[in-house]
Image 1: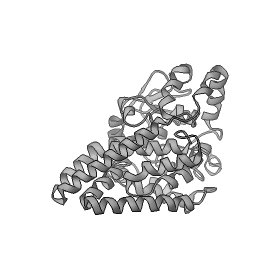
Image 2: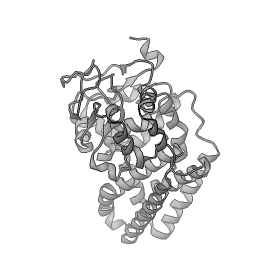
Image 3: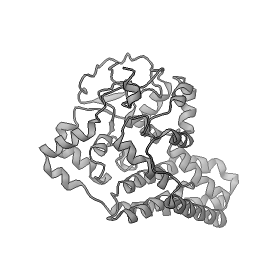
Image 4: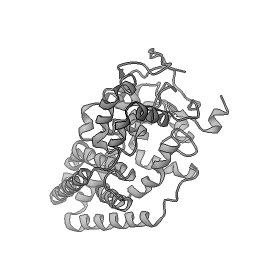
Length: 346
């Protein structure tokens, strides 16, 4: 199968892509692709053509200032809704959806940069930056994410190692039913955790830094509860829940690696929401150079346009959000799997 996604904008086709949008729903297994990942090859080609791209690698301390500002802002909003009390739970939920979800999602991206040591000079400082960014989430996520995310890069699309790939039980349970896909997105924060048990070669999550992460979050949560009340804590939790699930920013999980075309498994989004999402839409650029801080990813695209301009992209997270839910061609099997077990079935 080799077809382009219906809602993709593009300045060109990926090699071998068919422009028709008549893809049938994939219900029985992932798309098969070659064992070699595309990003290391493109990285080598970009460095050969543009050696100056290596100068973008490094860290950017300005992200630490953004983390501090967002954490303080979310804490202030928790204080406001805590003061209003539970009688304003409906207003709290609205604010969590239209404000808090964007703020917490930005903190997830900051954690992501910290995992790649792209905020501070030392790994130790980056770990503390990740924990600071994790505060508004009310549940510890940073160090757990650190344990499995690097495998996502080194084993992209490998069912046995990549936690970003849905489990078979998820895909079979959800199918292509719109309401099941909506529920899956709504509960995405829990669904991701269920995948960890199937992974091979992953650093155990329950290490020292995981406990430090959990301890800091518990102290912060108790402080919010004590000083601002339950409604303040619920505001932060709702912001966390919406930021990774049934929300336009949740389309980011679909944009990155869902595809109908095994010749292109990573997609970019260059829209306006990158401003509040810290350029996470530049996902091909990020996979090609994970060590480049988010602020410099647009510079990489400008530096090497011949490597990116012809790739298919998504123009709108909001449009993709609704397309994923209501387009029956989309299933959780709309991904590629390069694991040995999947390729053996080819």
